[in-house]
Length: 434
Ligand code: NAD
Image: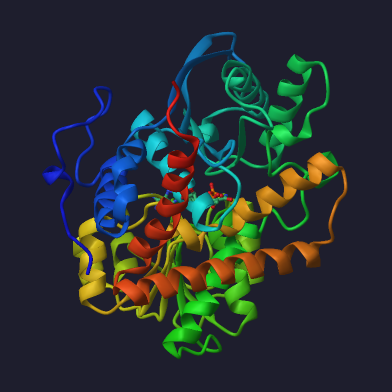
């Protein structure tokens, strides 16, 4: 069974530059690592490597604003582990981004890439900024200056950024152009999630949401839950949440509640997807949608539903909220949405959690396809991409489920067990230098 050690009972080692707590993202990740140790056998000797990012870069990003003033923003690129290949992971623009958060997001990328057996290590980037307060010109300057500053650590064979919260294909195009201008050649493979006509891949925009749907479809089948008529609640209606919601509706499910930073809308009869997407686009969020009733944000966690999809931020499912959930299945579209003690509550209540490190791996899987296509300059059809991604995710989930059944552990600990065995075997085989 899972060992339920809180982060505070870890051995007295650690990093001098962060002070994780039991509810902070890096603290959550460290607690998840403690839980997998009993299943690593002799490889546990190498586990300390998982508790330390290989490389953390903090950069100052100064830009001239439209009004002529100069503002400085703090940016990060963390390469958590590169034992299995180049770093891979998204770039987040958010006013609350910190080094500690980016470290955790990079570490979850290490686990995720290994869980689906992609030839990548884990990395992540971020800028502490509210992009909604910048003009398009300022956003471009910020992106280009940041790309130049982190240029010393990224590259198609070193570390390949991609979109995450508040970043998109346009931002990837600016990154690719800046890196290429500095290198003196067009190097499309330095980022993924680019526009399709600039070396991007078909299917990438919706890939993460599609992966959430694929893992949800498999989990529902194992639970004996029919997706036709299933009631789904979605937190976060951005790239991941909206694409997942559309696919669930396509399979006959109803979206009974949706929440984003502008509010929470519920309708037990199901929200109509087309008008909801159009309204969210027009108003910058779902809060103004009139096809359902507005409820207070905290009531989202009491919604009667079969499936809950957190697809916004970390740390959303606390132990207290976990006690209130009515769903049978939680699909973690977001990274790190469930705190470790909430995981225990959900397990005790018999609510199945498909963890982020496999649930949202569809995005990085299609990013891998994009990287491969850029190297060969040969592009696949959308059907090929969706079929290959579906198979990779289904196969990875089956391996994880078998591991969970074998040790009688949660899907999260099983995903970490499968991934950590691959990462630490690579570490051991490469050896230490000198
Ligand atoms: P996005 O910027 O497209 O959308 C984020 C959504 O979260 C928006 O709807 C926003 O309104 C909502 N949100 C923000 N703060 C909120 C709050 N306090 N309460 C409720 N909702 C809030 O971002 P995204 O790319 O969809 O990413 C969402 C999550 O999925 C993140 O955790 C991200 O790390 C993860 N993820 C994204 C990808 C990807 O390919 N984009 C891949 C894997 C994981």
